[in-house]
Amino acid sequence: MAFSHIPVLLNEVLEGLNIKSNGIYVDATFGRGGHSKKILERLDENGRLYGLDRDLAAVEAAKAIEDSRFTIVHSAFSNLKEVCTNLGILGKVDGILMDIGVSSPQIDDPSRGFSFEKDGPLDMRMDQSSSLTAKTIVNTYSKQDLAYIFKVYGEENFAAKVATAIVRQREIKPFETTLELSEFIKRVIGGKPTPKHKATRCFQALRIAVNAELDELKQALEGSLDVLATDGRLCVISFHSLEDRIVKNFIKDQSQGQKVPSGLPITYEEAEKQVPFDDIVDYILKQLEFGYSEYRFRLLPIISVPLDLCPEVSFCALSEEVHSPEIPCAGLQERSHGHPDR
Ligand SMILES: C[S@@+](CC[C@H](N)C(=O)[O-])C[C@H]1O[C@@H](n2cnc3c(N)ncnc32)[C@H](O)[C@@H]1O
Image (cartoon, rainbow, N blue to C red; front, side, top):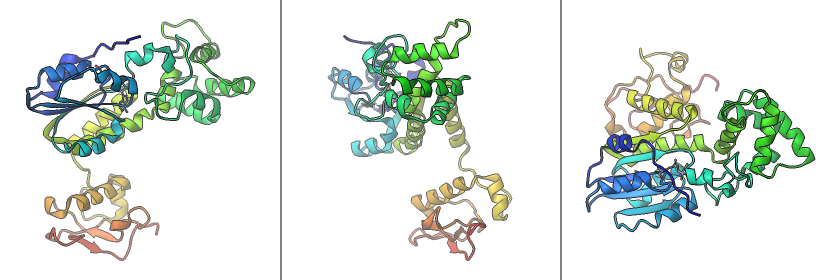
């Protein structure tokens, strides 16, 4: 049976990507290719489109596109940077699209186990080759972990109640199917009928946990920074507030540039009050990774890094000396004291 997917925000995506006819584009969530096909229509013979999807059924569907400008890759988009490196397009991509979440074909096919309305195995894996299923989570995770998943990923008010009931029930008989679980959750939550199925939030939560969706998104966003060419565009369609928050915070942070403590020189404690320590470490590592010659702003020697967190730069501090790119660690001065805890 063929399942289809209607692409959402099609015009907005095409506009947002600002497609150049000879550009290189990545559709990181191919699905059934609704967006990809429209992008291809706007490319000339020099343009290129690379599609990614972690779902083997989506990859299979992509094979129907016979177009030498198009390539499909079976991969999670958390590997975006690696995939683009292998394709030789790192830093050359003019636009990336991420239309995150599940596709209609995944929900509509009961055998995939995403639906709380059609019976199927408790699966929910987007990538059929991965090992963790919803069945494993529901039948083996602790009450605390289940409650956390329902609360944090599903924003379910009855998270603890549902988790407790599941743990009790599975001792009598493990959960096998989607309907069995959704009807059970409905009974546990109780109350008046609601337009939305009462298991909606818990199902969303399980799906996010099975597919590590939030970590996937964070990694893909980070990767996009290296994948995109100068003036490249990133377009993300998010479905729920958890994703939305991650995307908006990422864009806000990247638009603001790197946070560095103000009012230097200041003590370590003052610096950490202004900027989380991890950000400072990230900042120093980026400086080392890209080479000092690229950085021209003034930093004073106030930041020292504990050995266990950051061996490469431990006991180094940034200096306002003029930096020489040839000398490793140029611009860094040894300091005899590290993190205050050490
Ligand atoms: C909403 S659909 C995309 C629909 C597509 N834009 C279209 O027009 O047909 C999301 C797709 O992204 C895929 N997907 C979700 N998370 C992914 C991830 N982390 N890595 C790769 N693909 C992912 C899903 O398997 C699904 O096929």
